[in-house]
Image (tube, rainbow, N blue to C red; front, side, top):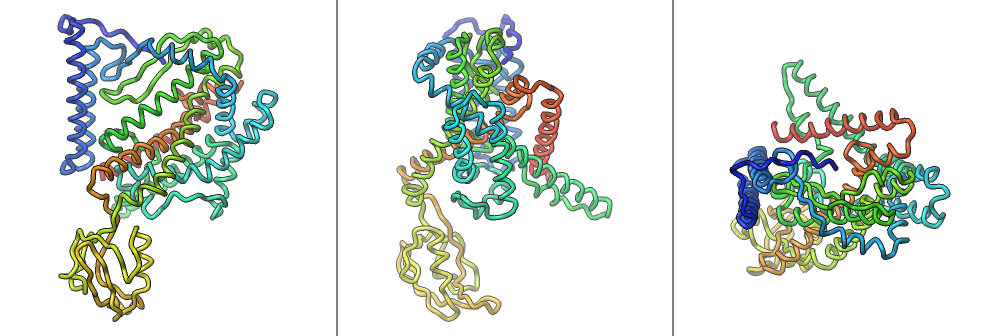
Amino acid sequence: MPKGKETPVSSSAIKNPFARNLAIIGLLILGFLGVYYAYTASYLILINQILLAMLIVVGAGLLIRIIGRYQGWSFMYLLSTTKGITTIDRISKTRKDFWTNLSLWGIVLGLGLLSYPFLKGRISKKLYVFGIISLYLMFAVVQPYTISGVQFISLAQIQTLVQGLSPSTIFIPASPLAAVLYAITIVSGFTGYVIALLLTNTVSILIGIAQFFTSVAAGHPQTSTLSNQVPGVIPVIPGITVPLVAGLIAIVVLLVVHEGSHGVLARISKVNLKSVGLLMFGIIPIGAFVEPDEKQVGRLDSMKQTMIFAAGSSMNFLFSVVFFVLVYLMSVYIVSSLYSIQITAVAPNMPANGILHPGMQLLEWNGHQISNLTDMVAAGANDTPNSIVTLVTNTGTYKIPAISINGSARGYIGIDAGPVLENTPSAGFYYFLYSVFALSLMFNFFVAIFNLLPVPMFDGWRIYKTNVKKNSITKAIAWVIVICLVVNVLALFFRLLL
C-alpha cells in the first residue's frame, strides 16, 4: 500500500510528544462522541445523520493527521509501527503446513472447480476435495447465517428485505434460481457467486431507473421505482449504518486476521516486513496493512505470490466459520431467552381495547407457553370467532372474546405483539456479544468474497495479474465489476435522497 507524502511539520504543530498524544486522544474521544450523537439524533433523518457524522469524521481526521504528522492525505492517514512484526515472525515459524494449506483452501473457495487447472500438481487431491465440499457447506450453511449480521444494518430497505427470513440451513436448492446460484458457486467459487449477484442486482436497478424515466415521460413520476431499489453495496459506518462499539470491534478483528495472515505467508516465503499498521478514515479504521518488501515478493514464483495475496481472504473464510459456530450456539441457547413477547399495539374498537395495553408481556395463550413470536402465531392460529382467548401476562390473566374480521374464519382480539429485548444488564451484555459475533461473521464472509474480485486495490486484482497472461481479460472483468458496483451504490443514494 502506498504511503503517500510525508506531512510537513508546520510551525503550529504540537512538538511536545506528550501534549501531541494527549491532543490526538482527545480528538479521538470527541470524534467518537460526536459520531455517537449523530447516531442517536434520529430527528435529523438518516441523510443528515450521515452528513453530520462524515463532517465530524473528516474534521477530526484532518486535525489528527496534522497534529500527529502522520503520513497520508487530507483526513486519511496511516498509523504504522514495527512492533507487530516480531509476533508475525514468531507465528510464521509454527505450523507452516497449516498456513500453506489454509491459503490453498481459500483459493479453492474463491475459484471453485475452476481453480483445479491452476492448482493441479500444487495441491493434494484430499485438500482440493475438502475445499469443494467446504465451498458447498459454506454456501448452504454459513452464508444464510450472515442474515444475523445484516439485521444490524440501519437501512430500511435492508430490514424490509430480511424481515421474515431466518438463518436456516439450505442443503438442497429450493428454486430454479437457487439451483443456478449453487451451480455458479461450485463451478466458479464465491468470486463467481458475488459477480452473479452484482450483475443480477445491477439489472434490477437499471430496470427501476428505466421505469422511473418512463413514468416521468408519461407525466406521472413514480419515485418509488428508485427508492425501493435495494443497494448491493452498503457502506459500513460504525455508529450510523452499524452499531458503533460492536461495529468497531468487528472491523478491528477483521483487519487484524486479514492483514496478519498476509504477513505470516510473506514471512514463510522469507519476505521481510517493513511495517504494520492501520489505514484511518478520520477516526475510523477502514483498512490495515502489512508492508512487505515488494522487490522480494516480485522475485517469488507466481504460486508463492498468489498464496500471499490469498492468505487474507483465506483466514477471513476460516473466521467466518468460527463466528458462524458462535452465532449458531448463541441463537439456539441464549438469544431466545433475551427477549420477551410483548404487546406493541392494541387496535381501537377491538375486544382487547381497554383491557390489554402495550408493554404487557405475553406468557401463555390458551394454555400454550409463549417463548417466541412463532409460539404466539401458532397458538393464535387456532382461535375462531366467538371463542374465548385466555391470555396470561405479567400483570394477570385475561379472558377476551375473539371476533371475525371481514367474514374471516379466524378469530381476532386486536393486538400486535413482538419480541422486545429484556431490560437487564445480563441481557444487554449477551445481546452486545451476539451483535459482535454476528457482525464479525458478516464482515469476514463478505470481505473474503469481495477481496478476491479482480478489482484494483483488492487482493484479487494482484492474484489475477500474477496468473492471467492476458491483462486485457483481467481489465475487462474489472471494468464490468466496477460499473456494477457504481450502479449498486446509486440505489443507496436513491434511498437517502428520495
